[in-house]
Amino acid sequence: MKKAILFLLPVVLLCSACQPKKHAEESPVLVSTDVHSFAQPEVAVVKHLFLDLVVDFKSRVLTGSALWDIEVKEQATQIIFDTRDLNVLQVLVDNKKVDFVLGDTVPILGRSLAVPIAAGAKQVRIDYSTPPDAAALQWLDGVQTAGKQQPFLFTQSQAILARTWVPCQDSPGIRFTYDARIKVPAGLLPLMSASNPQAKNDSSVYSFSMKNPIPSYLLALAVGDLEFRSLGANCGVYAERVSIDTCAYEFADLHKMIAAAEKLYGPYRWGRYDLLVLPPSFPFGGMENPCLTFCTPTILAGDRSLTTLVAHELAHSWSGNLATNATWNDFWLNEGFTVYFENRIMESIYGASYSDMQKLLGLDDLKEDLADLGDTSADTHLKLNLQGRDPDDGVTSIAYEKGNLLLRLIESKVGREQWDAFLKGYFARHAFKTITTEQFIAEYQQELIKGDSALAKSIKIQDWIYGPGVPDNAPQLSSARFDHAVAEAKRFMTGTPAAKLEVKGFVTYEWMKFLSTLSKDLTTQQMKDLDSVFRFSKSGNSEVLFGWLRHVVESRYEPAFPVLEHFLIHTGRRKFCKPLYALMLESKEGKAQAQAVFLKAAPNYHAITRNTVAEMLAH
Image (cartoon, rainbow, N blue to C red; front, side, top):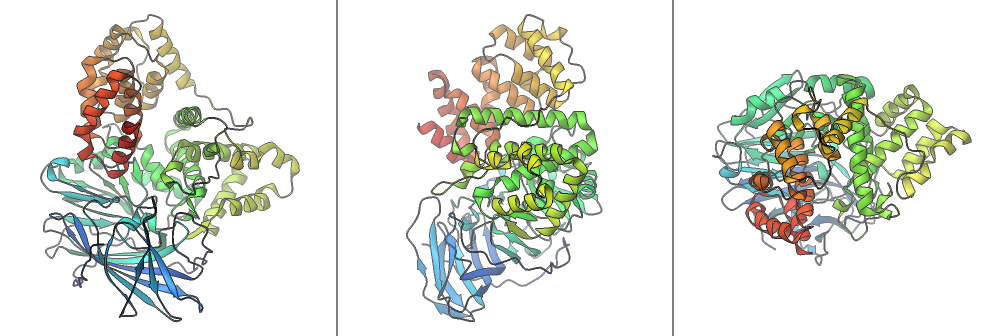
């Protein structure tokens, strides 16, 4: 492993903070049941991190130290950290250098870092550097950014990639507070999942603080030529200078979302809620890093029609960030609750007819994943078994949409008023703590079922959580607006010209439904008719363009191939890339096309998307 030196940087800036009150309750020390971490928190566990790093764009390396406050049991002889590809120079326990042991490399998990300790040990300092290809880090040249001038760096720690840039106990069941000191090149601004500056300083050294305990997957860092724009008393947006005005317009309703969320399930407990719009290589729609949601520029539609993603990431401030799944096998407790909460926020702001469409699109995604996985697959259970597998395998619509359906079912059976009271209490009881599926079931039975056997039988929660597919008591969803979109798609397929369709006033969701309803074997003339009337190939709405490009691939519509290539080269969001490459791979001609496009696109992708597509192409 490579080695690093410790940098002691002067504290120059006290950043404008997300300054919540210090949480009084301590997270319980868990017995290690996380198959994705080497840590043994029941023996020795981390409590607070001081992260001291220098960001070097030339070498594409982070260098510095992680100083951990620890809590140990009397019998403890070592504390174990998770690492992957880190270059560890030295380790000190209470300022004394010690011999450490790096375990053998385990696929997916990396290497354990065992540090000898004695009873009463208080601190462990690990001096290290990251390799240029650390999986959580994406280093972008200026030409890969919106501004095309300054370089950019961002992290993606979820699910178990925090260990590739910080030696840590990388389990969602282990929470800690942190402070950080980050040195960056002149002219760039660093941001973290913590308190954040709103302007650059002259020293290029910045300080950060997160007072609430978080799991390691919520550690985040971004560095770029960024500007800030306020959107309300406790919210705003960061973006590159060239796009800050566009972003400020797109997210103007952010304060309304926060107000709607607080009205539903209690106060926002993280101080500020800001957004950071990343370059297009970001592999996800959004990442709910506390105080600073990272989001994809693909939601910049120009008409605020894709901001439901922001509602989703905001909802994580309660579901996931506040009450956290104890292991990745319990991932549905994170995302299923968040999708439900997101729907309720959007219903509150934009009405039931809007959120009904959102729910049905989610159901379409669920049906697609069920078809891919198979109705009897164990991967369609809400409670997963991911031992020996990458936790990213659990990032399907099962956790999101099947989880959401279960919560919708419970709401319909117990009533919204009682369900809302339960959820509000749930988030309060588990604030800054972790929870397992089994703990949730026990609480559900005690607080909601209360011995009512008929109610329990009508919900069948065990079938939903531990059984495959979607049980037959799933709530039925409908949308008059979608019924109309489907009808118009069928009219087109039976001969009505595109110009004669009744689609005036369609919003993004209706266009998405229209496109998904169209036949997979449209003729060249039908494709040409649609594109000439609705100009899908020139759409600035990523969701609509994605829906259109699926037809471009399926119909082998060559006039739009340059649009397909441009989209795949300049969009790293895995949600879009993976299905489009999969469709191309269904034919011999498409496979050759996919390989050619990937050669051009791969340097722009984050490792998460790049590895996903590379694995697809290898088969």
